[in-house]
Length: 303
Image 1 (cartoon, rainbow, N blue to C red):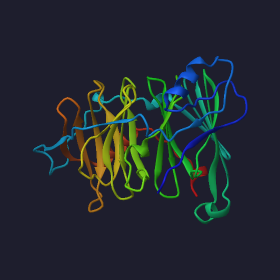
Image 2 (image 1 turned 135 degrees about the vertical axis):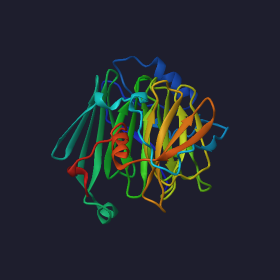
Image 3 (image 1 turned 60 degrees about the horizontal axis):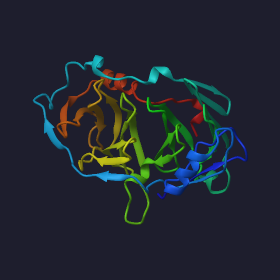
């Protein structure tokens, strides 16, 4: 599926969290007084993102054919407990520190009605910089999750009629990036889906599963240097969880293939540029790891 641009809307708000990736717009943002706002069209932000070469090697531990005896949860960084979600009718409100996100559902119209009863019509982010009204086109079916990093960026994950989008919003300078566009197809379309994702402890990197329907590869985006790394060409089919280690130099991820419902735990090391297959997980460990990733669900979002 093809992804289109995000548009900021609204006439005058405290300050719009938006921006263009070109130099002229960046300079304009820096010169704008904090108490004024201009409406700005946001590029799909493939521009300016560097793709870093260097694939990880795949290694296998001795325990890969057996269930792991235990998982050391003390090694993991957990950023999820700081968020609060409140669902009321057709509205969902997510809060983390001084950042508030509000989304509203509305009745699907036209071609949308053939796919779902409801869609997400409006989304608003309120922070120290003011308010931003954001509309995604096509309108998503639901908001899956949000996560605020230590580098003051929000990751917004939504479900579409086919696939899932991940949008990164920098609350400090207003720039945005559609992660799906980091992997471009020959026809110019981005990847159809983003699976699990998670911020590094310092908030400077975000790891995610990226691919088309039925496929998933590990990707890492460095928000500070605006560089994207396609970690490995191995297709992990579905990446259900990604959890960073507290030291911030490696992370674990869980893969589930089409040929087997068994969840497998892997570890990616940035310093070694390697992926280690550690072994299969028990259902209990699989569920515990899933609690460490950004996620919220509500019956209000089931179509």
